[in-house]
Image (tube, rainbow, N blue to C red; front, side):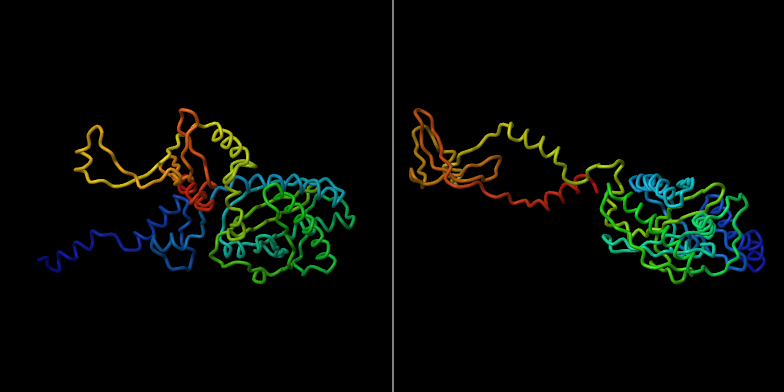
Length: 353
């Protein structure tokens, strides 16, 4: 058994506990996980740091990128007509954030517009920074074109400024509706405008959302617009947003159905006419020889079964035409047992979705 001296020597060989935590935080920072604790905060372990990480894995939504590329073109034209000035709109980034982190990162003063996607029955945020608001007001009210930035004194927005900002936001929302139109029909309605982020809460702080950042430049002045759509908002069209190109089919395809129907009509199948079925002992079957008679409990006018690949299709009456045996169908085909919903579900399972 180790004595006190051995225990002290063993303890000296081990590094202090906080060295391991600091090393973990440093390694995590090198990996880009953002786990470096802030000043004044208690250092956390690696598992807790991963759980509390503000990063959100970004699911690639190719069609969403196409939609907002289309929005950039539409906004460029609409804002030029709105301001009668040379306006350039660019798409800066599309990323995933947590709602609470985004709300806390908004530089004030700013106008936060709560928008409702009526068909999706959910909400989003459209944030206009103060630089763009003052630049747009300056342009609309006939201000001179100056290269110096607009001074922002942090005062509350006046009624006229809010009214002009509302008109600009409505133009942007109309363009957003037109950008989504080839994909789905959705109308974006301006619910209210807030200047305090705490009053613009539309989701839980930990919920993930898609953030679209747009830059608007007007003759060396302008600002940014940010559109935030929680994942719950775009969930109704998630399948469409996963498409690689406009019009990609995840469900029924009329062209494919037409080709399939043509091939089915041209296909040849074998149909079995079952006169009668009965069970016989194996011993009797082995004892059968030429000339033996097996009696069927059927009459000449009794219906027989028509089968295809083990599936019962319908019933028929047996007869003959010349030297050929024939059957005459007496009732419609049996309805399929697999419904369209079950068929589509089987198709999704087969595709591994």
